[in-house]
Length: 117
Length: 411
Image (cartoon, rainbow over all chains, first blue to last red):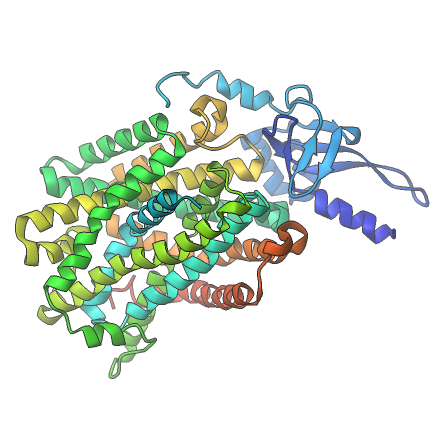
């Protein structure tokens, strides 16, 4: 496998939706954390999820706007949590354990639990 | 394939095909250019069938809705720009539908427009809160079938069928002045946009995932997209043809949605008028729900939130908050007093501009064998897909100049 294949893995991984062990949507791969150095093997250490991970991926003015609207939190999903990469990334734990449903659960408290079929 | 499910799916597609923009542009096009713009509805419907089938197939096989794959294919930056464009254009469309509902209710009841807009939004939000996805889709789609009165009205007024049929062949009427030619071109772009609104494929593909489609549903998807959309398009063509027959010769320009209802009143009297207005009301209400949910789908899928109305509203909380916000924003736009017809024109204009960016990633994914396996696009879907991509790109480039040069189709 060449270095370009590794790069392709990163490009194929970025912006894929993440689902937890219960098939619940829990974010998108917003960035990846790499380890390694010049001349050494580069490895993916973790997936980064949340608007804070957009910083290096967009112009400063755009990120400023995103931060004002959505904040700058980042959740880190260790690479060993990933069990499958296809049209989605599947992780082996629940979203709560990985800190991926903080906002979802916060908003859930505002929604009345009645009236829906 | 369950025949009952298939029939219901087709009927829902027929009843849900027409929205406020098609109502307005079809009636105006018929009165201004006779039968000469029917081919644009035919062309647009083929395009809608191609992209609808593709988005349904991607939903069934890759289990990916349009906005997830759009972000993965376009990347974060371009994806965000496309998301923003789609949200704005679909929000304007949603406001146009809500305004259209209030107008139609105003014809029916005589009550104040603003009050009816508020009542409409309350009723729509209640239905979206109470009903699960399939019921929402079917209720509005099946009630929208009252629009069939337009097809019956066309038959009853005995149009020159040979001229109606000849309108299906792509053409530019002879003897148009340069100014009229520009207006004709504006209507070509506006009708294409109205038929191919991007929200339709967001809603359709998300609906496929809401209903848990898989490979077994591919035939249902194909039949719904071809037969359902095709029959739905016949309703829009009926409105155009009746307008050409009834309004064109006496130089009446149907500037408000209510004018279209007269097409049914002329042959069938009061009953026809009532049926036409009710059909229009439910068709437009269905489109308001679709546009509202499409925006919520888009945001939720782009950022990877829990989404869908197959689950309870509190099980997809940010999605729920998103559709509530969209509906309230649409109401706010309507309550500013902006003219519904202007909203319809802005909606068509903005939608055609974002259309190519929505369809490109969809097509790339449908072509990708690593996701789609043996269900990837074959030569026909690929060829038609690229052809329509070129057509919508040309229309997107021409849209703003044509809008400015013709003052929004006023000539």
